[in-house]
Amino acid sequence: MSELEFRRAQAPDLPAIVALLADDALGASREDPSTPLAPSYFDAFRAIDADPNQLLAAVEAGQVVGTLQLSFIPGISRKGAWRGQIESVRIARQWRSRGIGKLMIEWAVEECRSRNCSFVQLTTDKSRRKAHAFYERLGFTASHLGYKMALWRSIG
Amino acid sequence: MSELEFRRAQAPDLPAIVALLADDALGASREDPSTPLAPSYFDAFRAIDADPNQLLAAVEAGQVVGTLQLSFIPGISRKGAWRGQIESVRIARQWRSRGIGKLMIEWAVEECRSRNCSFVQLTTDKSRRKAHAFYERLGFTASHLGYKMALWRSIG
Image (tube, rainbow over all chains, first blue to last red; front, side, top):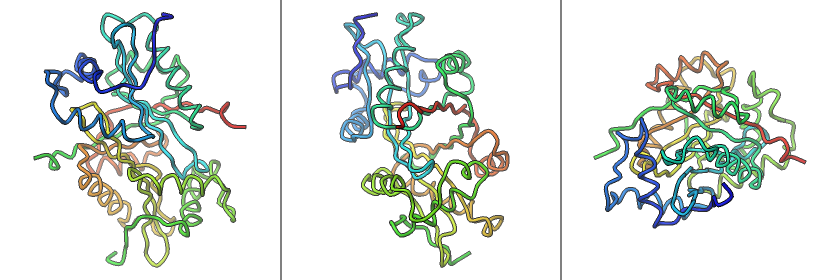
């Protein structure tokens, strides 16, 4: 595993990252990995890349084998604590079960620590039972319920 | 209720907002509402106020009677969807049970819609059973588990 590199994603990584997001039980119906990518992916990449509080990560081992997004969020609660938030964690199918996910989350947690975050948070779909066990092994506590509401009327 | 005003919080609102956060079953042990406020609260306010993707809201009815924080988060997932995230929702004890919470969340959701967010998300502590029923009535779905991990070693 010594050859793994954790770095900020660049625009040329985007097709590989979208392919990772799409190769997933839930992502398959949500993403469109066909190239050239839909412009909305590039718009999102530019918004993330321009924001010092967002970090889209590419994990490289010759090719992009993993991704996650980190958001550093300032807040008044908990005496003005910054929180680190992890989203969209994916590892290429053929690279799973080798401990890469653990290294990715440990790297992300260190990034949060270096940004003086008081805690790290994430949500996972209730159906992702293997993910739940994974995060609990890494020291996370499932203390919260995560609610979502689609705003479909905003589209079109 | 016609006199309620929803607006971006300003620095002079901060003691009232921290008092709201502290007057809560979980917040009581997390916050320090004594004035002058701890500098960390002002640091957090400045970070929020300087970030166009953060919105700390004050709900005013002659005085500050409610607060919430909105984060607008760009992401690659879901075809480059922006998500709106709601945090730290509080209403002054004597102003509860009058429908203000519903108006606050509806206002926040409209803010997310106006920023082209595809969905709105939030987490609530598993112990906040009344909050769960509240968000479900407003159309949110508890589709996720919310994990947190403290980074105590980053302090001090």
